[in-house]
Length: 437
Length: 98
Image 1 (cartoon, rainbow over the protein chains, first blue to last red):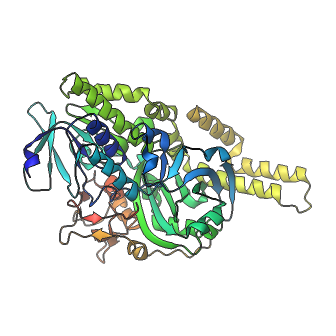
Image 2 (cartoon, rainbow over the protein chains, first blue to last red; image 1 turned 120 degrees about the horizontal axis):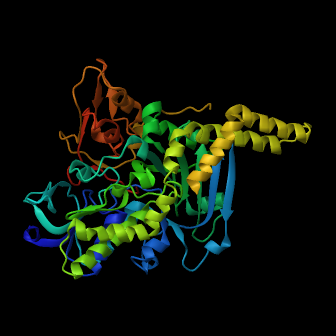
Image 3 (spheres, each protein chain N blue to C red; image 1 turned 90 degrees about the horizontal axis):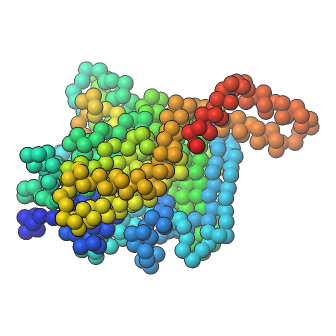
């Protein structure tokens, strides 16, 4: 190919959220961008729940609502604590979410990523799919100057390489730019796509006119592991899945698909997906290490963005917006360096980190820096014991059986003390509060 | 919980679209006499059940149904028990929805 002989301003590895945001932003500013995607089409290797946050995409493509494949805008969020036969929930639903420019949408990644990639191409970037980047090329001073791929031909050169290669991030970890994620810093999530007619979904969740509902749940569904179950309503499908820390899977030897099947069969979930046709089963890793797992983000001739940089807010279940924002900010930093004719050195690319530190991305992750360790070391208490206690307390409160109320309350308190001891309850509460602060 | 759980994952994988790179598996298990706890764990933890224990008590892989999640890489690459590469461009799992 002729273009391979050319030198590019930037090479982007990966066409997910962060890679597309970076490629689009740089191409829009006139940079000569080459983007590689190893899948058959952008999105073919990507998995997400998926909720897309409008604000962060608006900063990249302000009029995305005109043609982006959006499923439903969210008007209701259900947070559930589950035991084997029940759920205790906090639901928030508001008419305020039916606004001209809604805040959150469900999306289907394969479709969304194709759309985003069309925008990237329209902005002037060259996108090469079905191409796996096999190696970073470095010069004598160890600066990254290009890549090699599994296509015929030699190295392809660029001033800077943006590693948007996803959570597993083979290239960067093999090149020694960062460590491989640790088992306690990543969750394995499995999910299925359940298809149902649009009106059935709307009836079951009390929705109309493109409204959407989300359920996120913790409890005995993760069988003592640190984990989260989720159900997202799309237009004509429901994404249903569950994710738990890889370290917990490794230690307990649970099968993820058994967990998923048990979730599907839970009495609170079963009626919501009844009669659906499953069209896909997917698995993916999610970065869960938070602030303390963020690796070196830049070096001579390279930056790393998105999941590859472990930028994911586990507490708020936000990932794609951090990915998009880190991709955009890295691109903006590169554009600034380019405009002042600066070389893409570590010294200059620190600008990316400086700008990212000022954004919500790093500020949010810093706020919850102690949360991953807390939930990891106390997973059985937070994901099994407390959900069971909460269910017992709720049932004790609801069931009317002639027992005096004072006795019921005493029984509830006694059950909590028996399960965790007075000291344990206080210390769990304090540690949780400190990690949240 | 009294739940009849299918431990067969084939029915799930059957829904998926793959382009298998025949004869060029992207994951290999290093020959071993006895698997480590992590490697043995993969026979249960791999979401596509690619890993299986053979009659000699060794772990084998058939990577055709792999969804490229990387769980096995995180658990077993550092110890050298498995070798993990991306499939060649265009091959492997091709998510229709993701």
